[in-house]
Image 1 (cartoon, rainbow, N blue to C red):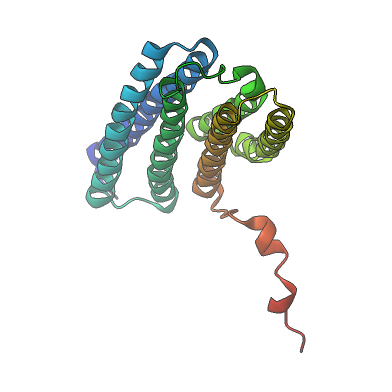
Image 2: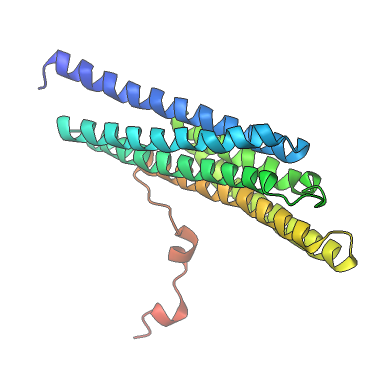
Length: 235
């Protein structure tokens, strides 16, 4: 049996890992909120600050990854803790990617050519809200170790995909009717896609915590449940 002080030190490290994850998620949440506000208001200064914040998220990813590796090297983690640490490493990667998407949305704001029509924040508002909800559910599920909420986040990603498809159809229709300049329509489509990708990253976080807590690898579960006809045994 490990000495009590060793067990306490290990638990303290796991708690520090959770604290670091929570700090990183707070920064990413702020980036998403700021990106939406900059998109709506055209606030160039806010957009530029948000882009700069992405460097902070990148640094947090590197530091948390290093901290996880240090724990793995120092401690002989039991299976459940080992899965959690590995899931945390996956989580920070996905958080960094969500931050990248928020920064890219801000680039759309700051790089908009003079005289170009507004970026159509109202057109992407529903997909943005749906994506934010999935991100929130996935992160909360991870931090609270809530498997049920993780599954809810994964299921809710379907709504994000539907909203993205709706935006795509609407943008194409308005460009065809001349209501939107082509360059504006392309920008709106790009922004909507970035929100959709945020939700995809969030589902990866949800899958990671499900694996950490239940040892279930549910990636590609729909495809794996129904193998292509050519792969079946006809003997």
